[in-house]
Length: 304
Image (cartoon, rainbow, N blue to C red; front, side):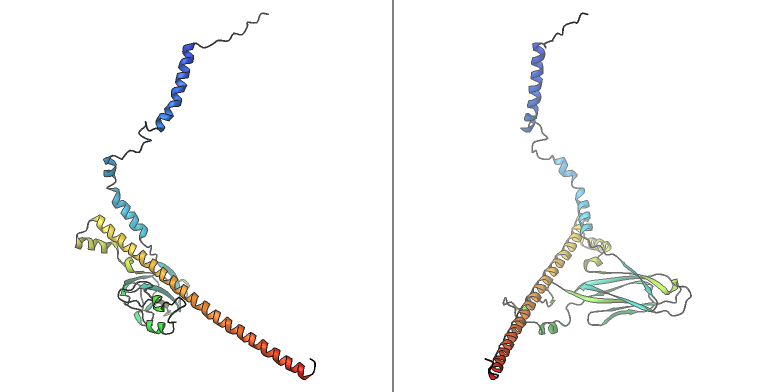
């Protein structure tokens, strides 16, 4: 059997040269792109067309920012049973308008509900019987009542030599800080008759309280824009400005409360330190008196 010998074929010089040239060129292309030969890798300014296309996007961004900064006011919904009363407390900023919206579910008419709103002093702001739905607006006072009585029992200075007036805001005309007063909203349900159905002995109440800039709706800003001839962008800027002012006021309130808590902690530490020192002194005095009495007794009995 005859086997053909294996023969090795060598590539031509032209093929080897073209292969080497192709590999060299392919290895050099990435280097050229890294040096900035490609316009996608270089830092070139954007054309004017990109700037002009961003102009319609600006109002949308402002709307998104306004919606993001807007505080979400959700309605409170609860069930009020017969002959019961539920009260809620809400802190309203001073010198600001507040609005309460209430809705009572339909029933057989044998379960009237009354609404009573009182301020921090107990003064009745609103008292209404047999409510079904409605909106009531009121304005918070300009100053907090009873500030003088609250400051009378406070220390005049602390360990840092600073007056307590720096920590307690008197809520003047231009004051900032914890400028809030509390209001109580009480819903009372008294059954006027007797019903055999259990469903008639319950009423569902929905209400919400808005204060500050939350009272200002889009209708308010639209009316303001018409009066002052504001564009849509300027109107959105006004909304964002009001929301940012609310955020700044809340931050200032948190800072004021932090200062009050720090001052209260410092005062408590001082009182505890004084009482601890007095307790240690009393214990030491008692120990000395007991030791002297014991020594005299032992000496009298001639034990020592």
